[in-house]
Amino acid sequence: MSTTKKFVAVAVGLGLVTLSACTSSGSGDGEGASESKTVTLVSHDSWAASKSVISDFEKQSGYRVKVLKDGDAGQALNKAILTKDNPQGDVLFGVDNTLLSRAFDNDLFQSYEAKDSDLLPPEYRIDQQKKRVTPIDFGDICVNYDKAYFEEKALTPPESFDDLVKPEYKDLLVTENASTSSPGLGFLLGTAAKYGDDGWQDYWKKLKANGVKVVDGWEQAYNEEFSGSAGGKKAKGDRPLVVSYASSPPAEVVFADPKPDTAPTGVAYGTCFRQIEYAGLLSNAKNAKGGKALIDFLISKKFQADMPLNMFVYPMREDAQIPEEFTKYGAPAEDSEVMAPKEIAKNRDQWVKSWTSLVLK
Image (cartoon, rainbow, N blue to C red):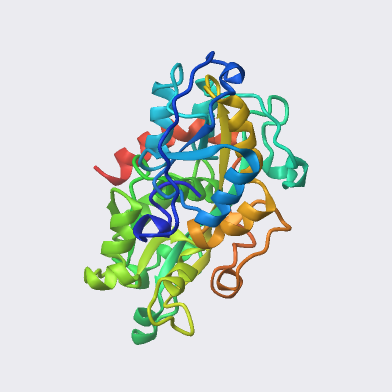
């Protein structure tokens, strides 16, 4: 999953590797620049990986990894598009299915079929003709709830989109701006997938009338407004419902000291939208050979197993081991709303424009 949405955005010291770039020269297509021993990954702020796993790749490949973080997923993508003729790096990681069409429309990536890509679920390998991107991970954007609040009020937590507009949940939900936040956009797309082009606006009218609060991004929504998170408790947040991720409850356990026996937050699984993150070799990568090796590494079994407790996403490879914290506290949704990238590309900008006019004005 992409952006400051993820828990790692508020955790420090997760083994993020950022190394100094080496001097390199060569042609823009990258093959002539193969003398460079640095390969540069451009990503969102939530990128993180265990130092030992990155070190293994560096030893095996001979490349040093440099990571450039460019804000949330939308910001990173926009900057990559603006600099595509002279890119900052070789690989872009973290562009998700809600924004992928922008990358394709701007010819951001060159073709590359990653080694072992046949081990990835075919439904997520959406660009099989041109092979411009490789699916790396997935996550579910879902409403989370504060268990303690609902227990104290003797109120059943909501389970579905329909529940959120009921009177008993008035003034309880905070969500992110669909025009500035990846989870906010995903939540909007989830409602569009659920109610259709003819019904999602009526749904949001009801949600607005029921007191939904909109803030700019995930950090503010989850760590300031939401009463169930560790950050929200410190900030005295008063909203017991928030748009976040199915993987947020295990993060609350992992980062707690002492660790609780059960997660303090739960997931309304009937409100989920499936988000998929991709990596692609930038069209004018200076070290295309190193970039290809890095993409191969991102879908290696070792890196895939390392992802959940670093970036709080689910690995794309089905044979990658899932940590107990995920299986116990943060299972993925069994029936997430989904939408084809072409459908998102066709409607996204108009939906966001209509949503902004309807909800924010």
